[in-house]
Length: 146
Image (cartoon, rainbow, N blue to C red):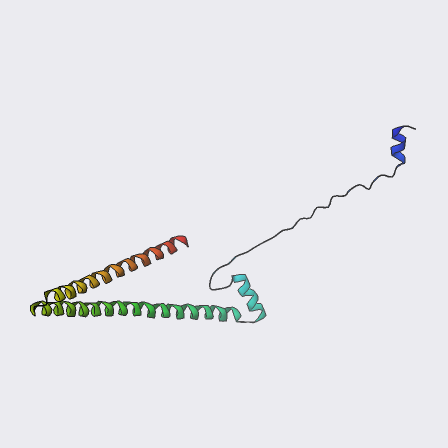
């Protein structure tokens, strides 16, 4: 028997059928204080007037946040002014105390008191200036990054 006849008599394996599966993935991203308008419309279908209530809630939240920010800014301004006034008082008292000490014959003590008063004020001023500069740089980086 020839090879061709032998191969024909043997059972042939079933032909493989290729199945193709296709998946479609869709992603949406919406960011903000309000849901996407399509979602608002769905809320309105379920609960009439819900979209208006959601928008009102977002407006009230924004208003509240702005009021809090205003209070914080006013507090920072007040604290800055108080710091300047208290620093002036402490500096003036230190220099007057140093002058009195020097006039009383305690030149070493007066010099130390006067020098430390001036050094403390200068240090506080430099530290405050650097802090404000760092805050501005951080804020600028955040604005550029967003």
